[in-house]
Length: 229
Length: 256
Image (cartoon, each protein chain N blue to C red):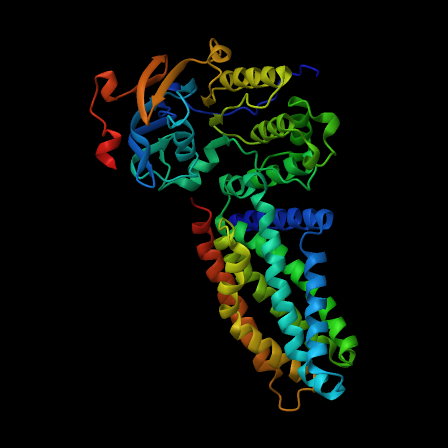
């Protein structure tokens, strides 16, 4: 119990450090929010002015924007650790490796959550979708989706952080793994916006919960190997 | 800069005769792309001693320190810190070792104080607020504590990295070129740190080219060349190496 408390304290310290650095530098949020906005606008232009068509495509566009921008955000958070070999120093601390992973994933989750909520609001405005009447299931979907992207993205950002072509490699590695999450999040969002006529929302949310748990456990168990030279 | 007495937290090492060697390596080798940075180092440093690692560039000094700090794995041989294997017991070794590398591992967007608070949280420092303030004063950064590290000079970053070591309770301190980038005051700070660690029984291994400066501050020296120990001198340090007439260690060519 004491060990778990220590690990939670370490994870919180890492997440807090990332949050402070992000608030000061705005390395992740500004660029990724702008990127998400551009993605939404371009998809909107590509689909044309038909309001019904835009509303039908909204769940898919929402999650494509969140996933693309989220990968950028998680990568940016990991780049903090490349300044002056900070990742090496992080590996030198006498703390559990899974606590380091948890801290980085928690920091990524916080950024992803802000990103998800803002993008959701933007989709509501741009595509004339009524998000207010289904805010609770939509928020639940965004929380679970953000957690899954942070869990996977943190692990693979650790894989690619020492690579020269990391900006290219990270999406290539992450996107296939995120396919189940993308499917579940899009279907859950579509069900929530439609008022869940077929009672499928719960099943898609369960899929997201299972995905998050599996990815968090796998990441926590293996992240330590990435810190070794 | 005011010359404070540096606060180093007390350690308990038990009976001196029961203390294992602080560092013990056996035929330690590390290859990089087939080339041996360490080519069979057998070394023993007694607890509480201060030892200089000398040698030209590429001799293997940094590689040896990085293996002892658990950052690098050895290719062959073994290394123990305080009797603990650096690979098998890496988690426990990290509780006992502090390492100052060429890079400082600081976060540019955090202030000096925030960087040390972060380190204190991960090191599990008791009374962190007081210890952080004391460490900032001890390394001469009290007046710059709320400045972001991004604006710090290389010497100031080095001071802050030394302050981070003061927050832990390491029994073995590994310093890689600690005088690099420091001004005269900063070099004096390193000298005083070496004295403070020695006083409380902390083992210190310093890789440095500043041989003149270290004379009189340390107990012994180990000279490396092309990954092999070529000489040892002083108290508390012994080695077995081909050039010293002991057990034959593999030559670089032999382990390529």
